[in-house]
Amino acid sequence: MAGSQRVYKQRIKSTQSLKKMFRAQELIAASRIGKARARTAAASPYARALTRAVSAVASHTNVTHPLTSPQESTRAAVLVIASDRGMAGAYSASILREAERLIARLTGEGKQVSLYASGRRAITYFRFRGRELAGSWAEGSDSPESSTAADISSTLLEAFLAPDSEGGVGELHVVHTQFVNMVTQRPRVVRMLPLEVVEGVSVPGEDDVLPLYDFEPSPEAVLDALLPRYVRSRIFSCLLESAASELAARQRAMHTAVDNAEDLIRTYTRLANQARQADITQEISEIVSGADALASA
Amino acid sequence: MAHLNVDVVATDRKVWSGEARMVSAPAADGEIGILAGHSPLLAVLRQGALRITPTDGEALSATVSGGFISVDDNQVTIVADDVEVATATAGR
Figure: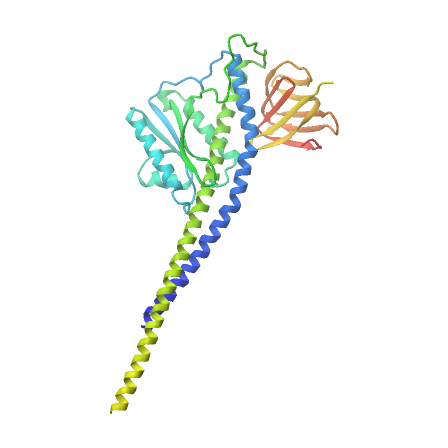
């Protein structure tokens, strides 16, 4: 029938316009991902310098700091870093699944979990399930600012340093996505606090001569200034890595969507052609049988 | 003569890096000047003026707001929360 032809034509048209949108999203993600990776690279000298300094203090003094020592508390904070928008395949779903697993484990250990969420997807996910969020940050999940990281870390440090009676937390876990490469991004859980000092440090041997460090004004003050910055820089790098992962996941998801749209268009075009042929055949047979009827009359 | 290898980094970028004869930074309890051969040091910075005299070229002066400076074996790293460069020069 002419009817089914029209339906196929409509479907082809709408799929084509969807395909255009997917393509645009893919290109946007592809162009932003380079920038996101450049920002990750740009932030790494700071992180490296901080790590070096923290390890220098750690290996040259015996100062302990509240941030490095475990706190007496039955509460644990979990920071979930997800995206603001969807259209990124399983990106948000897998980070939320990882978060749920962590929450279940912590609850199983008898700890109360207070949730912090970054990215609208995580916020709405927990809100919808009636979970209380101790803190949330939306906006800019694909291009995080260092001011956001500062805000997040100061909130979390405050929660960590608060005494147990005032709702202080004893540990902090961060669930974020690790950017392995363009095709692999892995959800990962990091225990941020209490700090474990420190990755990439060679423990000085017994008879190594340690350079004598001068600390101005004092080792405690230096550590006091360093550690919050260290936490902030690590949270910032988690945010940046998650942003790069989000964009990579989006690019891949949109690429698949474009492919699927093309497949659909091809199928519908075949069906439309078939319907057209059926229409023509029917018309011919109607004409022929009409002519036959006239001739025999 | 020995010289210092200086890196100035902010939270989200590398601001300056190069060789210098002298660095002067606003440490928490007073201005601190560093020449080559300085003993290892880790100092907290307050807000103030940072001045770097490179081995060649014009001096760099910048305003930093908090952070720290580390000196180890003529390797100077200035880690600042925020840096505003007043006069940028070559050496990048």
